Length: 440
Image (cartoon, rainbow, N blue to C red; front, side, top):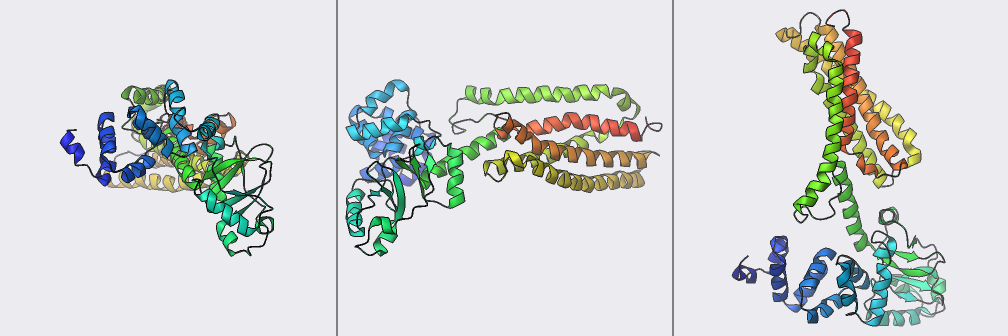
């Protein structure tokens, strides 16, 4: 993009054009922003984009922009950088912040410890409400993560309770904090997975969750804005896996084509091998097809109906698992429901399939004298394959989770491929029983 065009980009326009710029263009536009706009814009970038800008900046400016970030955000940015660049940038921080960031980087990125901020509002239980408010005013100047909730800690940093700022303001100044605090606090351990943490936020409708160690000492807080990014990331990974691909890990337009091919070709190859079994199954029934070619006309209808039913069930169960609505112990309840649902849907499609064959024969005389038996074959096959698709699609995520795999790997194409193979066998088996001595 030409320099003249770069200079014309406004703050709002830069947001729209950002992904289309190269690193040099991004840096130039960023440096042309007014100081206030630049800080706001920088904070709105993803950790990966912040790391990209920091590495491109002159060393004298790196210190300024790294110190703009809160410790948890700075840790995320440094983890996006090559390891050889991290020590130099860590040394740009003041000693206390450097200690905080180093401690945060010791946690995995997808754990509560890696998401938390060590800067939070705190008071002692023996303070009066008036003393606590005065102390909070001082803390507010130190850029704590959030001032809405105040955590009550003893001298050993054990979490004793929590109190809202609103409650503090509405309480009598002479009362002790221990008299007005709430002690039933929802907490998370340092090692808890980000997906489980997001469920805690959803279940209890929280703005922040304190993170504690095994001894109950408070280490930091995770706020709702941090978990929103986590929910988006987890949902994106699940959707990509359910589409028959590995999780990309990067925005679609930014991932290298070689990486894109690698992440998609593996699953496509596995699915291709699965579909080869469909060809083998059809070869096994070659004699039946030769005797009654008309059976092949309804094969796509049969197997696609089963695949669609399986994909529906798999998608619903995987999402229910992700939201915590369904657990491993619920597998039998899910199977019972899918047996009823699958049978009902199969009967509906079976009736429609029967009417289709009979009506077509009456109108166009397409299927010959054995059309009623053919209609029964199609109808019963639809009932069986839709039932099988629903049951297999719902149970496969439980099997994968029990084996230690991601349930989202029970992708729509994977379930469809499984049902395709079994659908061919089921269809021709039903046809062999019903049409034996007539068409077969």
